[in-house]
Picture 1 (tube, rainbow, N blue to C red):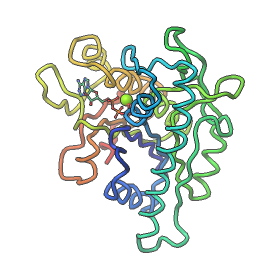
Picture 2 (picture 1 turned 180 degrees about the vertical axis):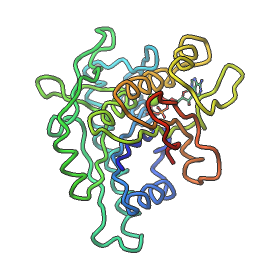
Picture 3 (picture 1 turned 90 degrees about the vertical axis):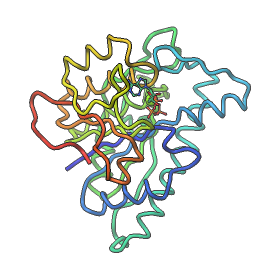
Picture 4 (picture 1 turned 135 degrees about the vertical axis):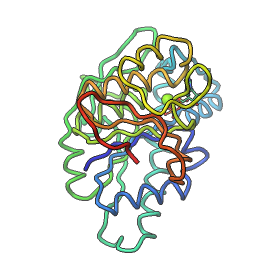
Length: 268
Ligand SMILES: Nc1ncnc2c1ncn2[C@@H]1O[C@H](COP(=O)(O)OP(=O)(O)OP(=O)(O)O)[C@@H](O)[C@H]1O
Ligand SMILES: [Mg+2]
């Protein structure tokens, strides 16, 4: 069982909680092949403001000029990635049976060209649209008992980094790995309808209607587009859930995307 889990940037601020790291470590120790993708929007915005660079967004995507790209590499592949890897390895070491067990390793799509993108809309600058990848490196790590932890920077055709929305990156990663499950952990307990209620289940048609209507905005727009891409790419189970609720396990698991070709359980 291979699961890609995308962890939203705000969930990792000011640093990944011990509870989150423990929940992930336990799944890995139970034999699940985990591949993690993380965002880092809040940390990047904070760094940019320290550098005196304004952040701007277009339909939920960060406009990325050269200085913003440099900061994105520094913050996402540097600080945020390293903190998450360290928290996971700390949690893994604290579990019984951990001595020869899984270990987290940090990388981005640039490493081994494992996830690739091309430059997208010119007005977005160095923002990539996913084109595919070469999953050999990730497969090798998973087969050797490592937990790849990926910052959402993809390799352009010349190998240089492009900033990619972490949801789009996670969807492409799940498709490349032929993952069984894709789970988005975020700072809201699921997708809300126009009345603010969490939607338990969405099919493709409902997803289109919701995206086209006024109920979805900001970072939820690329998340829903990424769900669509992952469904089209054959990922069987997809869900968007609140990190807090997922960690405690006591609440319903957010919004499930109904795949017309699969009848599997909600990812937990
Ligand atoms: N219909 C909706 N239902 C739920 N959340 C919504 C909706 N429309 C907009 N949002 C916003 O989308 C946000 C989640 O997307 P956001 O990009 O901020 O988080 P993330 O993807 O988890 O983190 P990151 O972008 O750092 O990886 C929520 O905090 C909420 O403000
Ligand atoms: Mg987001």
